[in-house]
Length: 148
Image 1 (tube, rainbow, N blue to C red):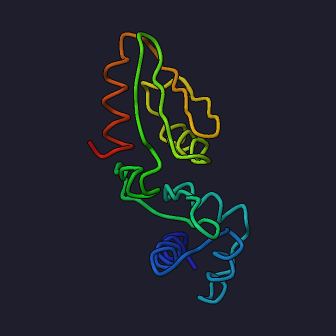
Image 2 (cartoon, rainbow, N blue to C red; image 1 turned 135 degrees about the vertical axis):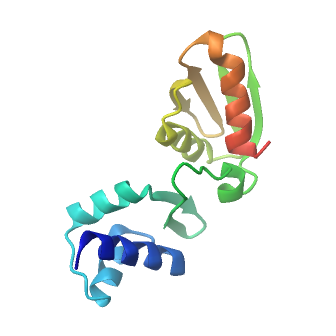
């Protein structure tokens, strides 16, 4: 099976149902006649831009179109409750237990406006790459996390 065919199978399997782990995906691929190592599968998922999202009863892999980032509110429900900023930092408040997932989402997107994040249980501190870009960062986060 070529890489193109394998990628097609991975997309199809993820789109058809909840794939909670690379091992689950590897087994599903084997059932389709594609034997793949964990290292190859990991590279393929990275190439596809697949993300693992936590959810009730575990998590699952999801795919987004290249360049498209769905609002986090769509993926995690109403986890983000508020986004505020002072002169230097952005603070995101979430439901209890959701801050780590929100911070991981922000970090995974590698926004040039973000230097990094620090997550607690229900609060994410977002450190901007420049205070001059703070307003743009706050707008970006509102768009990506709240869909506004």
